[in-house]
Length: 560
Image (cartoon, rainbow, N blue to C red; front, top):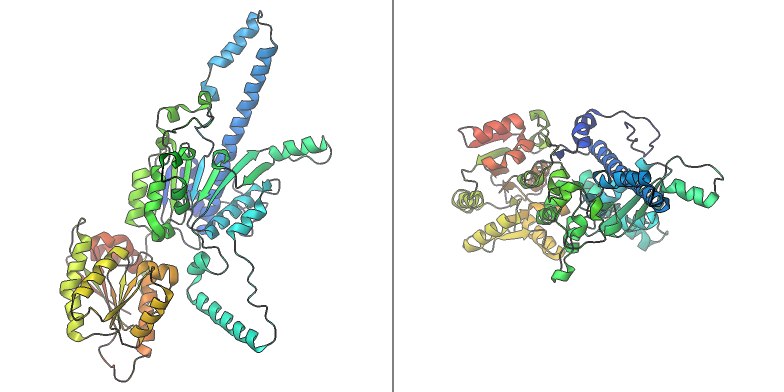
């Protein structure tokens, strides 16, 4: 079916597959494992619409097959009960149907077939709305209002003010707040803005029954009125063991599958997952990737309880403990990261094969071209091994970079650190040094609002020479750091758009300098290793990345 719907949710308008959908669909329909690290705001609609259609097709086809077999088995039992035991011909027919058990093996140990992991309630709401729009008007959905209430946000009445001084002041504050949120960018507002629910603790069970709407109408109207040709009965917030689709954040799923005692440990509802979607993997990476790997480890394990399972209808590969080889795993991310790629490689075992789709970055589309500040950008490759790259990077900074900062008495230095573990190591290094022990501030994702405000003010005023700024703090909060004149990237940011954002902060720092502090011009130093090739490619482009990673030179200069 090429009818994937338009962006307004109109499923009646015919629309052919896009080029990207045509590339993905053959592997998706053959249940191959997919690693799509080429998602963007422009093609997200096409990718998620195709995945939503694939999920609906899989669930409804499976449920329809089970219903068909249930009806046929019921007919056979009724025929067997009505036939005379002395009729040998009738007995032979029943035996022939009963011996062929393979035709009835259409189920798993438990009912859930599809697991979809998403980072926030807002992203879950958007994906479920795609599925609902693809079901059509004949679908009968229970608890839809409750779902929309719990997964969306309340109506913002910030524009409704009375005409008095206090309300005018509140209106100005609200307008200022909207301006600040708008400056954080469209990507941030889609995930954490005021119009979306950014809660990362949720789980939802969805059950589907094909043609249920038609049977309901026949039962209620007894043939009167217009009959639906094929409706779908959908129920939100169903119990996991009575659900076909499970949508959950890795955090909530981790909490649901782990308990303090053995009796609370229950993962049997994940024993028969046939399709697993990990959407917005780049956002999940910034939350806690360990939760994702823990949840994937629990899939397709042999159940510990019977759970009212009819073992005569369980598929043979499940009984043989080979369910992992018949599960389709789909990763969708905006970026290629070693953690995402290694997890996919470890858990992608489908007999249908694998498809990895990534995007090469032309030089004119690299994010280094978005830098507006006139700054000499130095990229320094740090020699290291894969086992000790973190220690080697810290050693290089302590021996080469930090002494130079101390010797020049360099102020207004912003140090960006992608990993919190590297931040701890670097913070300890600065605290051990006498010259920098009390001359730096830290802004992390765990800092209190008062600590962040106080640290930013002291850094902007020059009372603290160095600021340590973590990658997750910038991802979740998008602080605009004022007063920075020198930027040091302890590691390359995973999200390439962070590089020009950090670089353009130097413009505000340069414009706010006092007449006393006329020191060296703004500078930028980015440390990278040969294992940072994916992040480097998104910043400088594919061709430059190959030369910088494999070339004999270790220092590279870009000028904007």
